[in-house]
Length: 116
Image (cartoon, rainbow, N blue to C red; front, side, top):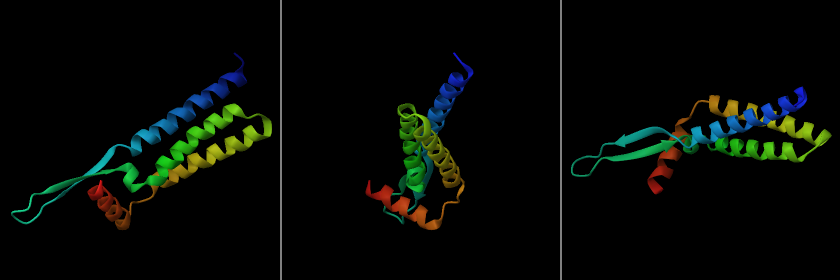
């Protein structure tokens, strides 16, 4: 196997592993919210997943997987453009996961978990 081919396969494998890691991470429970109610009402527990707080991260992970498939299906200029798009997805994922969670996002995810 040539050096260029090994590099190409390695890029695909690492890209798929990174996208899968993002998808697995955002589907995990990130927090549990225990709400204590006045007596006689029971306490309630809501689970908050990463997807609830940062839905863009999961969408970008799926887009990255689709981009990897496009990378295999394209040649020359289209492959280079697809590679640039994949790099942009990676940067967007890092930025999305690095941003602080705001109170409105917490409140929105809490409301969604009560309706599920």
